[in-house]
Amino acid sequence: RHSEMEVEAFRKIHPVEFYKKFLVHSVRPDGRALLDARPTSVSVGSISTAHGSAFVKIGGSSVVAGIKAEVGPVGQTTVASKSAQHLIVNVELQPLCSPDFKPGKPSELAQQMGQNILSLLQARDLFDPQVLVIQERKVQWYLHADIYCLDYDGSVLDAAVIALVSALQNVLLPQATVHDEAGGTRITVAAQRTIPIPLNYQPVPLTFGLFDDTHIIADLTSEEEKLCSTIFTIIYDTSGHLCAVQKPGGAPVSEENLKQSMDRAKQRAAEVAAHLTHHHHH
Image (tube, rainbow, N blue to C red; front, side):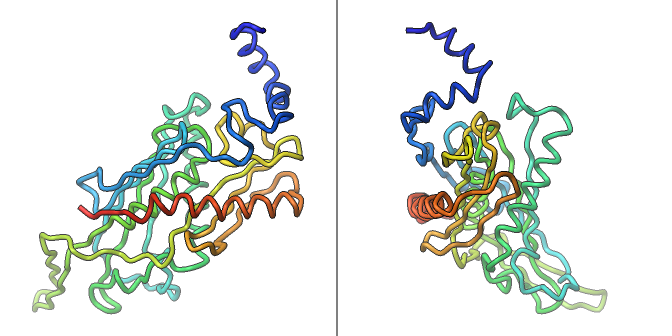
């Protein structure tokens, strides 16, 4: 038996070799099988100042999403029918949430993640944008989603999308009324928040890594993210439809590995569905 210190030293000096010793036995250092996800929890409505909010934990990663609705003029875009047009996503990765982050670096990563989230949701309208209309072609609600990573231990994109979806399901908007008066337009907003945003589907992502160009592992820790030659994300909705595959580059993934990953991602969406259905509004 090696002492715990020797093992930790070996892990730090030869992370890949350390990891391989486990994978030979189809297990990972934290005891998970290759395609196992870490314990996942979702709670909603904890931020009282937001119109909707959610807190998501996947293993050692935790993310909070808050959504605030603001009234604004209807944009002059031709793609106004897209729900993504009315949803502004801002991701914050605090330098404190990971020992790997240096000042300046998180913001690039955060911007990239914000863009990734929006592009993953582009394919199909997440909700009917008509819900946000206050007065046709004139006034509407805009949703500002702030996603904060509190603890970064891998698969933060997965946690962020689940948090965003949960927070959207938790949103209640107040009734807003437009009064056209001699001096211009006045908008009154009711005190009660009563209008939900029905979602057309619930996307659930699962991020995979290709290790040593052979093994596919699911729901990566931040240590695993560093060791994988390729990282890709597959999103299914909770009804089992494929929404998106996002692979930013890296080593190619074999057809067999991709099929295995897709099956697992579909299964993961069904597992997470249980956390998404029992949502209560404030």
